[in-house]
Amino acid sequence: MSPFTGGTRVEVGGVSVSTDHYIGGRRVSSPFTFEDRSPLDWSVKLADVSRGDDSIADLAITAAVEAFPAWAALGPSGRAEIMHRLADLIDANIPSLAAVECLDMAMLEESLRLRVLARGARNFRAYADLAAGYEERVWSSNGTANRVIRMPAGPTVVITPWNAPFMLSTWKCAPALAAGNTVVLKPAEWSPLSCSLLADLAHEAGMPPGVFNVVQGIGEEVGAALVRDPRLKRISFTGSPATARHIGVAAATNIVPFTAELGGKGPFVVFADADLPAAAKKAAGQYDDSGQVCLAGTRLLVEASVRDEFLRLFDEFADQHVLGDSHDPATTISPMIHPDHVANVAGFVDRARAAGDTILRGGQPSPLGGDDGLWYEPTLIEPASNDSEVVQREIFGPVLTFQTFTDEADAVRLANSTEYGLSAIVYTGSQERAERMGRAIRAGTIWTNCFLVRDLTAPFGGCGISGIGREGGDYALDFYSDLKMFQVLEGTTG
Image 1: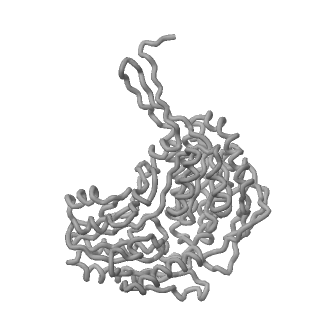
Image 2 (image 1 turned 135 degrees about the vertical axis):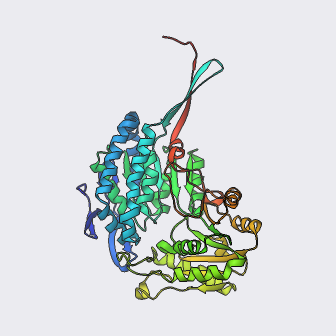
């Protein structure tokens, strides 16, 4: 990596990282900072990061506004050339990106190197190619020739979560840039450093000044200032429903299209005719990344006739998990992101225990790392009622619930019994049942006998409080565009 010179830089995992904002093609510092610490060892301060405010938000959006006309005029092919260079640079710098994100967010370094970060490069290539290959819809009706044309919408604010920060930022920024928009990215304050590296790479790829900007800081401060700016044309957010409600008010005030992915409480439905070892192994895999995955199937719903056999198999696979250092390839469960998050997860479990729910395994912080360690034991809870808080609310930690059902109708009832609707997993040996369940469960994505198999052209998003709108493929490019209906009277000449 050839880091952009200028501003304040620190070394993280042997990699030079800027702690400043990236605005208008240059590094910009703030007089105030916030601490960024490593979940792997909370005593280690990685950096003091520039803390944005209203003035920084204004500076970034001004840069995006000024850069927009030229970037939009460059056209899909011209933009694709730069985005492909950026994708190549991401691929070339995966070891450095992995070293930083492992320390900053604690995701398993091996997973980052082999799977997660390469997805960031694929995002830029895929959306660049989709935009460049767009075929306008053309037809004749009522004596006119008709076309649907995509127009770049304008300056866009992207706000991303602390889990998988680099990949999820590229997932949103890539279609926005490919569509011809300029972007202000605001990463989460708990894991901002890999997004700062993305700014370095964008600069090295030749992204024109102001086209891509990164602003760091606290959501209630600079994030709020960004989303209420009337010059914005699009807002994209991933995070909690509570924060989305605030952003939605700002978007509505300025009549700005807004998309939000807001987490889930996915059912993991297992029928008696399923491959039980495969289902139990995949269910135990929902503890990966300490359960900090919005798509995880956190509510295990198992046909009553195979309850005991499933639990026996589940315990065998869950016992194989290794809590440890995210740098160690043997580790399967990393620490959680922040002490406040550990306390939040522990609170859910403690309240469930007090309410009479049964703790089938785990249920307490791990002693690993001592008093400041952020590991939590993989936990399975059998609720006394479907109304239990641990069933109805997203925990976002290594905590699953276990319930049984009597028949297909009961399974559908339980699967659809929360306000969420992001994803679902179904294990069955019947193609007919798979089809029925796929149609009956309310969720944006349903996997049958598999999990996390993704196609970048497919729509992604949630129902209920799991979100608004869809990302992925042409669905994302349409969101980041204004669609124009262009009609010409047939026979018009000259």
